[in-house]
Image (cartoon, rainbow, N blue to C red):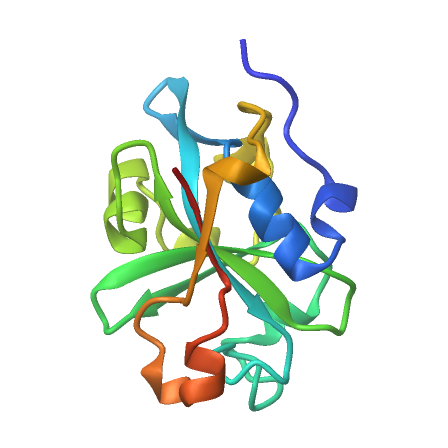
Length: 172
């Protein structure tokens, strides 16, 4: 039996803290008539309007509006017209930040992951709870020595300063 889903206080914290703390947690999803889960093993942080890799960097848009809302909601968008990417909104309202779930279980890419668990844009703007069909719950305890920090992937457009920030966290 899975433990309860996380609520707003877990997500309503600094972006990098939530990103690190998501490692080792379980991403729970509904497949047909049962709940399944995968261990989250890779994430990336997108931290506010100063972060040139963050979709909210240029202000509120129809696409990024969810990032300005309350913590604990899904921000799911289509990348290159092909892959759905799943982010969870974090931090205080009006501070646009989110954590991209890049990998869980054996799925080592954000597009592969959403495809495997059946997440699409239908989850966008929904609360990350069982009603949406996708949520996060407890997993394993992860020591800091098991976390590798690296630059994020595929964000050269953000410029050398932001492209090199160690905002990607990987469970080793």
